[in-house]
Length: 249
Image (cartoon, rainbow, N blue to C red; front, side):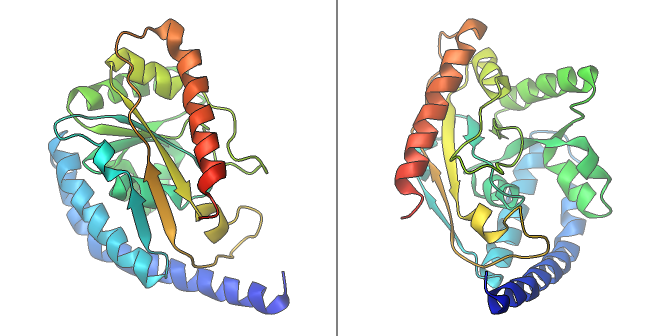
């Protein structure tokens, strides 16, 4: 990377952080107010706030979001949406732009962050992966969210992809959850967030458009827990093929 691009990337990163903090302080009170409600009403109120916030913030940092495949969400149905995970910027893209109220599974330690932790907690099902009881409780809460008509947004890679491969191996959890609830899975591919906020350069970022593509639903009707591994492999192959074919478009 040439020195000028490196310097400009650091300046842009600081600009994006300052603007994120400033806009967060504007929305934090309405977001806190949603926590006074129970689900699904909390998420029904929360998602439009997230959409407005990111709908203003992302264009201001020159990262507008484009969606494809919104028509794959049928009115009156809810889904388990499985996304690739390349960057910390994925959640501000996925949660607001999924068509309809949704919950995501998130690391419990992030909820301890001052101010942002409140926002993080409001829209998430928290899990401490080091504790078996927390993992069990999170599965129960995910089933409850689906039963209440909310979408679930899950990242089956488990953590950010820091490899040179299109996708990391998938864990079973998202697919077991979908099968148990008998809810369809919608694969979603997020493009460019890993290039905007690369994992291997601290305090550096660059602006570019973001795209999230929702693929056609995959039914889990009639499947059992024994089918989870096969379903996982099928979805991963589909997502990897699509990502490779479309990442340069």
